[in-house]
Length: 207
Image 1 (cartoon, one colour):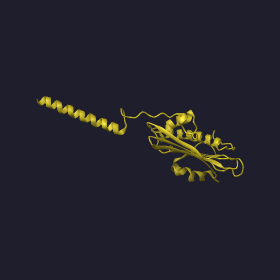
Image 2 (tube, helix red, strand yellow):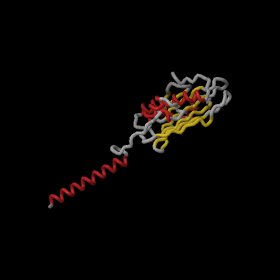
Image 3 (tube, one colour):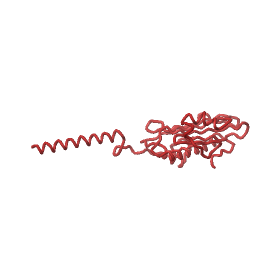
C-alpha cells in the first residue's frame, strides 16, 4: 500500500511539474506554443517604402517575430509642381498591434547637414551612437535608426529630402545586422521619395 501511495504521489508531482513548465512556456511564447512568424509580402508593403524583394528582406532582418504584420503608409503632402517646396510621406510597420518601425520622408533645408542630424535624427537615438555611411550629402545609422539627407531641388537654395527610418522594437539580430537592414530600408525609401517628389537634383543615393 505504501509503495502504491508513493507512486501515486510521484505521478501527481510529475504531472504538476509538467503543467507548471508548460504554463511558463506558454506565457513566454516559447515552443511548442510559439506563434508562427507572419509573412511579409512585398505586395502588401507601403508604396512609400518601396515594394521590392530587397525591402522585404531588410524588414525580415530587423523586425521581431510577430504572428502578423500590417503596413500603413501614405504621401500626405505631395509635391505638386517644380515650385512646390513641400513633401511629406510616411510608412508605419506594425506587428500584432504594436508599432515596430516608423519611416518618414520630408523636404527641408539646412545650412549644415550636421544641424539636420542634431535636430531631426538625434530625436530617435543619441548622435554619438550613429556612424556615417555613403549616401546623399549626409547619412548616419545605428542599430536603431538610419537616415539620409540628400539633394532634391537643383535650382535656388537647393531643397533637400530627409528620410529617417526608426526601429522602435528590434528583432533578435545583432547590432551590425540591424544597422545594415536599416540602411537598406533607408536607401529604398529615399529612392521612392526622390521619384515621388519629382526631385531633379542628383540624389547621390548610390555610391
